[in-house]
Amino acid sequence: MDFVSALSTATLADLVAKLGPQALEHLQDPPRRPLLIDNAGHRHSISIYLATEHSSKDTYEKICRSTAQNFSGAPGIEDLLSFHNVENLIAAMTGVEKLQHDMCPNSCAAFTGPYSDKEECPLCGTSHWNQEHLDCTNGRSKVPAKRFTTIPLGPQLQALYHDPDQARNMRYLHEHTQQIIAELQRTGSISLVDDIAAGWDYLGAVLNGDIKKDDIVLMVSLDGVQLYESKQSDCWIYIWVILNLSLDKWYKKVHVCPGGFIPGPNKPKNINSFLFIGLHHIAALQCEGLHIGDVSEDHVFQSDLYLLFTTADGPGLVCWDGMVRHSGKNGCRLYCPMPGRRKGTHYYPALLRPQGNCIAGSDHPDINVFRLPLGGSGDYAHNLERLISSPSQQQWDLRKTETGITKPPLILGLKRSRSLGVPLCMTADLMHLAGNLSDLLISLWCSTMECSYTDDKNSWDWAVLHDEDTWTAHGKGVENAGMFIPGSFDRKPRNIADKINTDYKTWEFHLYIFGLAPVLLYTILPERYWINFCKLVRGIQIMSQHAINKQDLEHAYVLLCSWGREFELIYYQLRQDRLHFIHPCVHQVLHLVTETMHKGPPICYVQWTMERTIGNLGQEIWQPSKPYENLAEEGLR
Image (cartoon, rainbow, N blue to C red; front, side, top):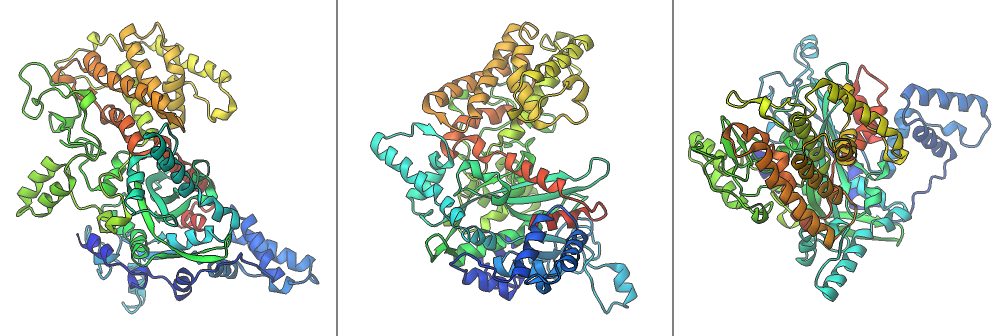
């Protein structure tokens, strides 16, 4: 709770933020007119800096020297700036700068908030300081062993309004919201769900007055990335997505705001300590307001930041919500109160009760798929209070199992009227969902799914791709179909039989399962399995659209709910020893339509924006010896 409590009292002047005087002044008194650079040397230096975005510092310096030698008499040539000075100039003009804080060299935790004064990592005991430097100076000089980078969001948002066109683009959400409210008042319903503005969660915040005309609405996305295939190089990145912009602008590089870079290669054990700095800045701005200078209208206004959604892949969401992992009794990522059914030490989200004398934890009655509890309908606040008030560790562990909550989430420290809050801010990620569904179905059809000793793979009549010749021919069919897919579809699926165990990409799985497989498996997959599969495919195709009308939503609801129940009947077959067939992704599919009604189309909060950002930054790393530092520098640029 210490990190959560620290957020609730955050201010911009707190020492934890490490904001310099210049950055603070810029936040409180932003420019209201477009930036004009009169000095030709400075202007040319900035042009070179931006043009050499993917190059080294040395390249920048060489171009400057060449320019000075060959254009010695040109106006402003004597004012060309060094790499360090041009970065300082840009930071001074935009207010955008990086903040660096110390961290455990093993990546366990960051020395922030309650950990800021510790001499050793509170989790592994490793020294805070570079031991070699400490020894060389006889303990007189302390240099941190490792650091991580945070890029404050406030100056990045202010910079968007420095350009008149961008400032006008930021009005999209408010204007679209007014159109939807007018339609609601006129017809009593929303005919087309095409944006978060059509979701009831956002609309509720607007109608309650929590989101106002000039407020900036945000989504934060977290993911891990391996920088190099050939060596251990994991790190973690989070970004801010600005929902005031239209959907076609969210994913573009110029609009994606980097939040922070957490070096690996080890996985953080207390990720809250790393996220704390970025969220502390948000919490401070929520308390004090963000001053915006809108150059398109030559005026300054105060904007409140509203955190609408938090996104990650399924396992990554626990970093935001503090809930149990997907194998827990209450493992729904959206916190619906449907309990899982136990097999061994894991729980699986099966709707239907196993037949026979099933074990305790699996014996609750069947659940009607058409009456599935909504995401976020669990009594989260009451359950969290029960967990926090546990009188002993034993009671904590027991209540953790019963409630599905492991700890208070960090975002609980944000202002209640400035955030949708847990669990409503949690989202279903269609990108990772499609990948997980692909893994599940392929493991069943190829007979690679784990088989209990009481089961027999010879009885799996759905395992039509288990035969090597059939699998090889199927892979060739996928490859041959690629020539008929337009280039606008990006990467074409390769031969899945050859590439599935190496580097088959998420988008390839998406195109394969939800585009090609229904045709390629026709007459190969037994009819009842094929029909069941086609229901899933059509439902996901509808849910992948940028705009979904009311009739399509109703159709998708029937298709996906029918698929989920039938999937259990024909694969799991109500057998206790097949409960592990019901992966969390099966349950998540059942929430897609109702979540769309509350949050807008899934494409709005899918992880593709993060994946594109990771791809962009990964391509820009030119210093393999310092990949994490280089990644953070590219994010800042």
